[in-house]
Amino acid sequence: MPGTPDVEVHLFAAARVAAGSSLLRASPGTLGEVIEQLVVMAPGLAQVLPRCSYLQDGVAARPSNLGAQIAAGSRLDVLPPFAGG
Picture 1 (cartoon, rainbow, N blue to C red):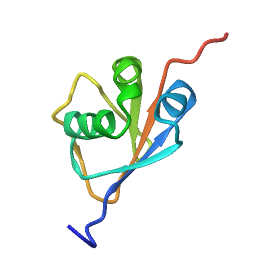
Picture 2 (tube, rainbow, N blue to C red):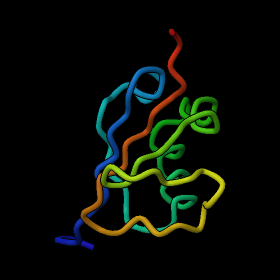
Picture 3 (spheres, one colour):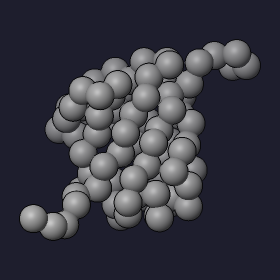
Picture 4 (cartoon, one colour):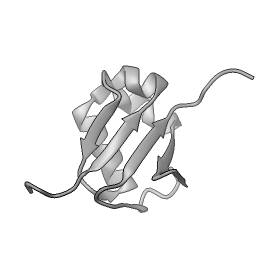
């Protein structure tokens, strides 16, 4: 729907590479629905997203809670595991 705020999805590291972009926009919905939208937009994310952590507006959004609501106007950060010590 035109004019409806969307969810800004910021992708980092391997997720950014898989998507070919550091920013995607998705429609609001559950975390599971937003993840599904991302895979449709960038199929390469299907291999990366199951290993990622998510932050909604700076607060951890647990991948085990795919029913968590991601509201319009939210920022969702997608963080793959990082190597190092």
